[in-house]
Image 1 (cartoon, protein in one colour):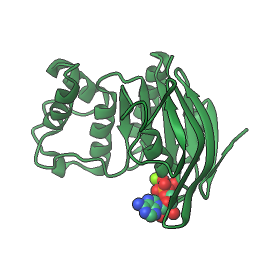
Image 2 (cartoon, rainbow, N blue to C red):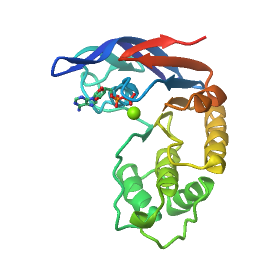
Image 3 (spheres, helix red, strand yellow):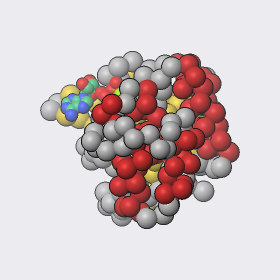
Length: 212
Ligand SMILES: Nc1ncnc2c1ncn2[C@@H]1O[C@H](COP(=O)(O)OP(=O)(O)O)[C@@H](O)[C@H]1O
Ligand SMILES: [Mg+2]
């Protein structure tokens, strides 16, 4: 069982309140959805959950350990967040292989299987700078999925995808939650959240409320 708890999380940047007193508990085997307008704080919340920014006050607690204090990063995390780095001059496979070397958990065949799973050709020789937005979104999803992480934090995962791509992601995520993953999805698209999520939250100007 993997748990993520957020306690009284606040984030201010130059006197602007970006996140205001967020309290939340997430557990494995569930899909959590976060909807809200552009600028409501979804990405900042996810950056905080992933340990990419320090809270102004409050804390993120991963399996009982306080992030930035007891632990330096979130283990077994698959992440999609805006502006993730892909090396534009490398193929999709090479990009994933470079990242897979960090943990050294999976082999080339597993990387290729994940690329195929998101509907791309693992043998595609094009560099990712030639990819469409939808293809880029798929390769980034493959990167998040490839090591079968305990936690998937997906910020706007269907951005730039056509209907078939969106449906594919939805079916992949249903498989991932069956495997026991903890999944959190942020989207400005209410439909994404309605289809996939057991528990739904709405963000409004940095505040979070649970939706019925
Ligand atoms: N590095 C930053 N410096 C100042 N303001 C920021 C920064 N990052 C985000 N913000 C502000 O925080 C608010 C929430 O942004 P964001 O989390 O990206 O919203 P969302 O993902 O819901 O569209 C916005 O008002 C945005 O302008
Ligand atoms: Mg965002």
